[in-house]
Structures are given as structure tokens and as C-alpha cells.
Length: 172
Image (cartoon, rainbow, N blue to C red; front, top):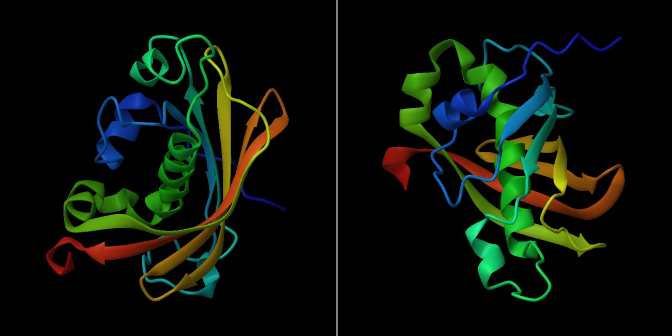
């Protein structure tokens, strides 16, 4: 049986964790995180595989990108969907950092290093609520792998496998 979700993060909590700011902050809310293994241990390992995150990005016509992509047929760009996926996936680390989040957010950064199998199935348009579901598929050393799916109203609009490097800021 899965542990009940105790992670429901509002925009202020999202902003505290992510370094991104508008117009590049792609997560409006984290609906749930289901950690695996010992949450008192940030060390990478197979016990972190299976961590699930669900987050949302609400799209309005006021998004700056819609002024130019495209003026007569507004579509949220695929590259920004991938960025939203990566930002959502990064919350897989949140339960392991929560006890000392301010220090850890200062010391660590999660860098996107790979995107494989990206598929875009339907346009995402103003008024859509993009739901992002991520699962940790690999956790070896500094490299974390994720499979992320994006849906709108229950219909899959995009998916990708993402690799990220969790590194100490002094290593970058």
C-alpha cells in the first residue's frame, strides 16, 4: 500500500525550491510526491527509483510566449513542455531535502543533461491545465533519470525520458 501523500506544495513553496523565476518558472503547484526509501538520506541509489511526482502548469493567454508562438494559433512550445517536465521531475528530490531545504537549495543544483524519446501528441493551448507526472527510473551517483508524461484533461499530450545531474554548486 502506498503511503498517503503529504506533499502538496503551493506556489510559494515551489518558488522556495526552484531557482527559476517568471517567465521561466513552469510549475504552479505540486499536487503530490510519493518518496521511496529513507527520506533522511539524499544519497542516490536504487532505493530512490520509483519516486513519483504530480505537478501542474496552468496556461493562460497572458503567457509571454503566446505573443509570438503563434499570433493566430497559440501553441505552448514543446521545448517549454520539456522544461516543465524537468522542473516537475526535480521535485523528486524534495522529500530528501525538506528538513534543511534552504541550505540544500543553496548548495545543490539539478541540471538537465539529456532528453530522449520526446513525443508531442497534441497541441497545448491557452486555458489548458498541463498535468505533469514523473517517476524516477534511474538513480546512480549524480545522475537521476525520469520518465515524465504531460496530460491535459486526462489526454496525454507529451512524454519524454529525462536525465539530470545533481551536483554541488562549486562543481559547476
